[in-house]
Length: 344
Image (cartoon, one colour):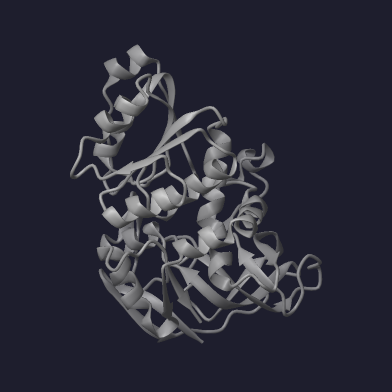
C-alpha cells in the first residue's frame, strides 16, 4: 500500500509500505477516507520536532483521520465491516496510575499516531486501530467532517476543564482549527461574549462569522486595549491557542483578577515567560491542556448540530497524491486556509 513519509524537512515522499493486518481480537482494519493537516503535523514538517519528540526519517505523520471498516477482530462488537468511523489517535495503556484514575490523556505509556518514536501516522491507505479508538458515524457524515472530531474533541475538553459558564466573557487567541474548536462549544452553550485574535485577517473574519463578539489582528491593532474598552473588568477566561509568547503576554493583561488562562497551543520554543508579579497580584490560575479524554462522542454530536459551521472550516480539499501541496498551503496560510483535508 502507499504511504506519504517525511524524508527531510519540508519533504514528503510517496512510498510503498507493507499493508497492516489485525494483531488482536479487538483490532479494526480501516481503509482511510480522509486525513486532516494539523498544526502539530506542521511542526514536524517544518522543524522536525516538538520538544524532545524528534523525527527520525523516514516517518509518517498525520493523526486526524476517518475511514471505512474493512475487517474486525473476533471480539469487536461496536463496529462492523462497511461502517464509516472517526478515529481517536491516542493509544493509552489502561493499566498505569493515570489510566486507572481516568486520566488516559496523561497515560504514562501513551502512544499517539504520527508522533515520533511512538506510532507511524495516518497518511497511509490502511490503518489498524483498537476498537476503543474507533467511533461509528452516520452514513451522511463525510470523512472530512469526521476527521474534525479529533481537534474538536480537544476544544470540547478544554471548555469542560475551564468550567465555562454562559455569563462569562472569554478570549481565544489564535483562530486556527484549535481556536475554532474551542469557540464552537462556547458558542453552542451561549457564552455571553467571545473575543478573538489572529494575525491573519481572514481568520478574524471567519471568527466573526462563526459567532465571535469581536475579532482583531494583533499585528495591526492594540488588541488588549480594544478588548478592555469593551470589557473594562477584564475577561474571565483566556484560551491561548497559537503557542506564541506575545499571545501569552496579552492573555495575562486581558484576564480579570481571579481569571483563568488555558494553555492549548503548542509553542515551537522550549520555554516561555510569565510576569510573576502581575500574575500574583491578579491571583491568576494557569491550566495546561493535554489533548482530551472521552470527548469524541460529544464532538461528533456537536458536529451534527453545527454541520454548516464545521463545513465552513474545512476550507481546502486535496487528493492523497497532492499531500505535499496541502502541507505547503497550510504552512504559508495561503488562500484563506483554515483546515486542509487530504482525501483518499
